[in-house]
Length: 425
Image 1 (cartoon, rainbow, N blue to C red):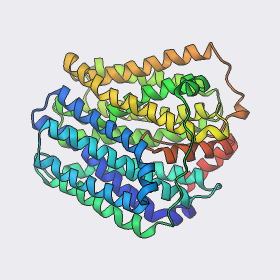
Image 2: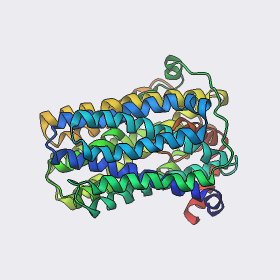
Image 3: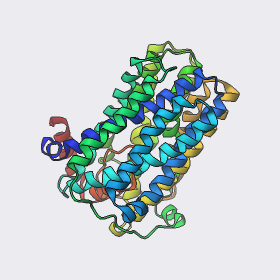
């Protein structure tokens, strides 16, 4: 792990700074929107707009890179991000914020595709799994750290937006000064959604549902905190707990994933997520207990995405992985767009508890669908399963494709060795 970090530390530092900037803006907008008096419906549209842009950016960035190159695409989109982060404070109108969120979602998707291409190019077949694991850790640490920065200034002013803009601008320096020659952007054939669904119905349905859950956690957690009257410090702690859980639970769940029928594990994790979420909605819990709820929900919901990718991968041929990764990301993106809109409606009708009810509902639907699929198809032998690769839903097609390739070459014993190496490194 230390060797992998030494080979790509500058890229990882730049990516962490990007995550700091994105983590600040995601939570800050939820807090500032409540201050500005935006309705729950308006905030849900604003938060959904990010995923509209992110989905579009994921699809179009490879074409842009082929036309003008990695460096120009990275610099142009990074400049847009910095500008948008400042414009939020200059124009606190929900319609303007919606348009800005589309732009910043598009730009972040493009920046991730470009930076992850460079990162993936630094890895070898032997180190790719550890590189992806380290990248996931960097992402989570960046978002968690961003929540602490929210307490540096008044969210009703300009300072925090400027801090986020500066962090994104500074992230260019280590990335652009350390990049290797630009990797090729291959043109891959697409896989039809019908064919992808036939290969892995559970993967498609589950990733769609988890797209909704993740967008709710990423976009609406701060809105929930503002509606129930939490302070900025309490909101930052609540959001941090979500991502801390996602970081802590990835590895034990991944270890179990390589040693049992993944569908049973997906069902068990989703069931626990549903129970904890519904408890958060119906019980009048003190704030400290709500931090425990956030930790559990984040720890259970985040690994489900990687579990569903690993399950889908068990039924893919090597030549289909790149095409499948694009299709799965599109499905995840559609779910992410719908998530904030539905949860905003539920919170508008039923109050703040709709935040947890939405997550509980989607998790329950996943449990039921897993039960259905277990009655329709036998699980592959555990010895034939690929390895589990920790991954977050923010990853681009580049990283998802690399994760699928790494998993196909890993056996459960390989994954265990990698996890031990992660722990030691």
